[in-house]
Image (cartoon, rainbow, N blue to C red; front, top):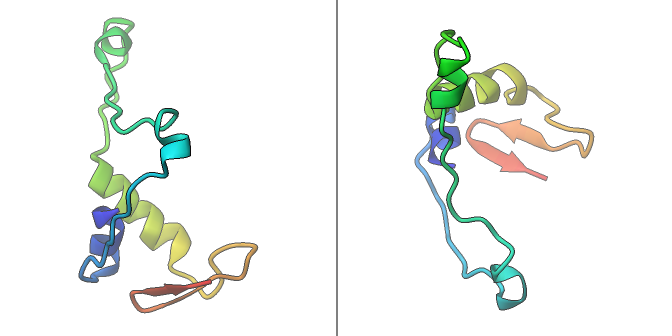
Length: 81
């Protein structure tokens, strides 16, 4: 989430809340990919850092007058729905 703020040139303003007990057991808190099998299979195209990919997505697709079908608008670093 911090990468999205960085792409917008905004200071992060993130407030965390506890996961509701009813769904806590079905939520995945950590993901890490293992790329060794992909590379052994011959892939050598390189990988994009998460921060770079988020920045490209935010700047290339989200920074526009209408962000989604829900008509969310983006004004500076403030996203409003």
